[in-house]
Amino acid sequence: MANWFTNLFRFGSTESRSAYTTSTDPFAPLYEQLGLDGITANVSARTAMGISTFFGCVRLISNLTASTPYAVYKELEGGGSKRAKTHPLDYLLTVRSNDQMAPIIAMRTMVLNCIVHGFSIARIDKNGRNQPVSYFPYPSQNVGILEDPKSGRVFFQVVDNGDLKYFAEDEVIYLKDLSFNGIKGGSVIKWQDATVKLDLLTGSFVQRYYEKGTFIGGFLETPIPANDAESAKITKERVVESLEGSKNGGFGFAVLGPGIKWHPVSRTPVESELIKIFDKSDRDIAKVFGVPLSLIGDTEKTTSWGTGVEQMFIGLTRSVIIPIATQIEQEINYKCFRRDELQAGFYTKFNFRALLRGDSKAYGEFVARMIQIGVYSPDEVRALDEMSPIPGGWGAKHYMQGAMVPMDKLGEFHINKKPDNDTGETISASDDGGSSSDH
View 1 (cartoon, helix red, strand yellow):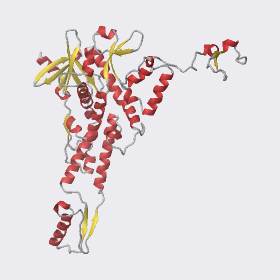
View 2 (tube, helix red, strand yellow; view 1 turned 120 degrees about the vertical axis):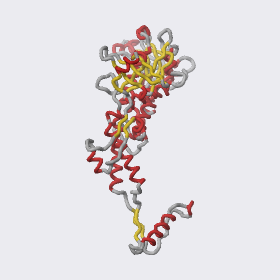
View 3 (spheres, helix red, strand yellow; view 1 turned 30 degrees about the vertical axis):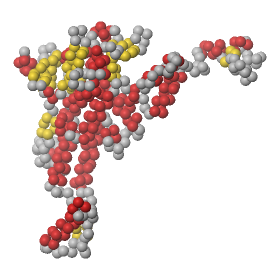
View 4 (tube, rainbow, N blue to C red; view 1 turned 90 degrees about the vertical axis):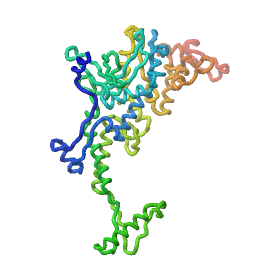
């Protein structure tokens, strides 16, 4: 059995390759012009995560998705739905996913592996009633995808604590990133190999550039003869010592002798080009993930989504987080509910209300309007912010402004208040034959 699975093994999941700048590399002329020739970089998931922008995007997306409320609901016969807290799956999504992981950790692990490696799986453990009692995500680098060429069925080969295990597709939660065949998602590192590679090569060049002392902060102009190397050396040492700080007797400034001038050197052309390369690399990586740079710490960058943090999070949620969450919902609904439970109306759902509701002013105007037209009751609005119902029960009622009546009832419900009506009694138009002038 194991040999059969091994023979079916089509490809592994470890994205690792060496980025050598050889003559066959189409980018070799560019690397040579930038001084990157002869430098190597190993492009892998681990090295890509060493790029600050790459790491920041992955962390933001995985944390936002995993921290969004996610629970089990059941459709009601009269419409709407309610939380199904008694279902075993709800416990896994809100309290504990397995003995070792809280729900946010398990979900974040799945999402992180998916967006870095292109796919992720989590083993589903079920009870005798075919209901889930835990789910456990695996690192994607320990997972191989196996496909039966005859049936097209997909299996997974997993290295778990040194043991080799095999799972059918219906035994795991299986998330996939972009792909052409829909069977295995492609790694963003593979899709964007050139972008990641250039960033890694540039980082290696910068390290070598400064380690070799190529950086020049400035130079001293002195009347000392050019052939008097010893005097020049002494002058340099005195300046360096005076700039080393108070710990070694200096105070951060130098006292220069007669005729000696210090000329600072501005940014060199090489350093200027490096800054441009890193800046472009940051933008390219952020575009790959669809994340505004301002949300991962680069406050100098702007975005077309708006300048406020709320608008940026709304844009990120709609374009990046919701597609990931939708796949999770569909996969878990299909794999973790029995057919009779699905027919009974059970489903899971992320609650993105907090991320999508905008700024506090706009949100306040929205809920006020919803209460005024009877869509929400006051208690329903309070529940959205984890507040208790209003005492007395009147907060559970739905209210509507008095002026809003059906158009065919306008004559019947037309209200005319007399200014001299001290009792506040309201008189409808039908009471006086349609005229209010006799009252």
